Image (cartoon, rainbow, N blue to C red; front, side, top):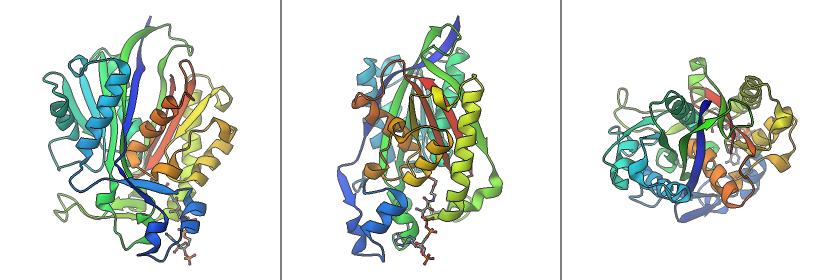
Length: 324
Ligand code: UT7
């Protein structure tokens, strides 16, 4: 028998305020047409004043727990993937624990920017498979609107806020690829590219949160190659290829990156979950948001083989293969 980390519940939360591309035309030299054609984004949600990453994470967690039929007290550990925490510390995960009324278990944050959810899932998988935890809540939650430079048209039109959460539970499998749960992971980072996407402030430098800076075009050129390679590595570790995949749930940064990666993996767009038009780039929240929407729509079903991949600041990138 093989211990597997199996998804048993998923949920998400999006702030109420929806901002269409046209709203940026009033303050910036940009257009709905440019944003749509270059990124695929049509609208995004922005958090209300006073609405924080932990608030959104808690809403998503409640939805995922309800979907799983599991009480907060039955969760052994909470991991939140975020680069936009409420405070420098404590972790968002401990705030979620307290908001959910959890008085046992552990919680901590993972920071791998847009690849954060893949890193968090990989960590949770290792903890569950090794027997350290039986049930875990993994959340991606971001308030990127708080680190935008609203005068920089090349970044501020691309990002959005939101949260998605997944409940993983230890179950016995056979050790074969037909098992439900996480089957394979591949993680990578390369700090030589640290200037390609970063925030120009922080605790030990400016003492402030800073604003996001990105060399979008240079990153674009790295993205498709690295995403296809990590996806192939994760699949290859368990003897599979793109043809075996039922659904790709990619990081939602740019429709052209999503299409280019699917093409390299020889997968038609009919098998790709795309939410970038509605959410924009929500960094670590983008994959659990897309997964939650696809499950709620009945597209991803029990037994489907799902591949997720993401790349972002660091650069940090990775892929995960799981059977839903
Ligand atoms: O999630 C983390 C990972 N992030 C990514 O993966 C993002 C990767 N990069 C991208 O998605 C794309 O590079 C962008 C969407 C950011 C930009 O698309 P692009 O096709 O690479 O455009 P570009 O940066 O090469 O800019 C083309 C032109 C420039 O004008 P010139 O120099 O050709 O005159 C920009 O100044 O578009 C201009 N531009 C804009 N024009 C209207 C840049 N932003 C805007 C804008 N509206 N908002």
